[in-house]
Image (cartoon, one colour):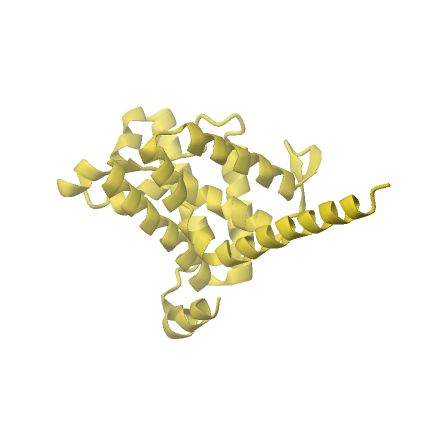
Length: 215
């Protein structure tokens, strides 16, 4: 990630402090408005190509506040979970890298929107979970505050859901799922490639050794 180091040295002052806190606060406020005041309000913040082209440029940013936690089985716990993992990443990376990570996902969502007509922030927030899981796979957390499990298992589950949606989704869904993960792919793509390569080669070596030593 040398090029990111160079960007940080040159543009580090442009990092947004407490970015994750702002995103989660926006998610909470929009969700409360939708729940208690006007359920149609959610449509005013979504990212829609036709609306943007007609001058509603605020949607290029406000789509990040589209309440992904509403309708979830975990609800507010889901929101708090993203608050927790997002702040952990921000403490590790600092303001600039966290801003760059989110900005790459936003750029991917914009491209997806203008190709397919709309985009959601789901993949951007999911990419934060993947980043946390990649960095701390053996971190233990409590499901429902009671059941301990390791982050890597949640990561594999979410990856399976992502793959399922990619396989069965239409072309535009696939574009959105991939481009929304742009931050994760840029930050960790090289590491993941070599991890997959080493895993496959290790499997082949074990299989060859077993064949040679079979009686």
